[in-house]
Image (cartoon, rainbow, N blue to C red; front, top):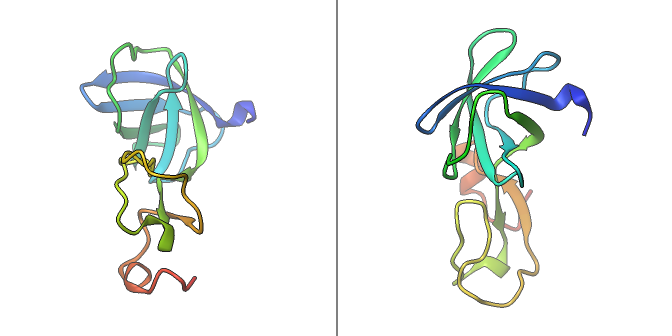
Length: 125
């Protein structure tokens, strides 16, 4: 990851986080990570100006503070699709939470796909 993909937290209000990027502003729906172990996940919801985005934290924000570095993952939140997910349980990040076998025969797709794409059978691209 290059420095162009790094931002800095400028404000935290509950789950709402504003982040400044000096080089390249991430698009809406991009996933950002911050925290000592990159455990705080933020999804970009709006671009406030040429250098700031506003996002919603998808994980607890405990320990998040102004000045913390933020990494732009370069992609949206994704979920697994395919026959391998039938009868399985997942968290919001697509991790299996049912103690079942490792996922096989799956693809990862953005959760923000259009409705026509979402209604298509999972074996089509």
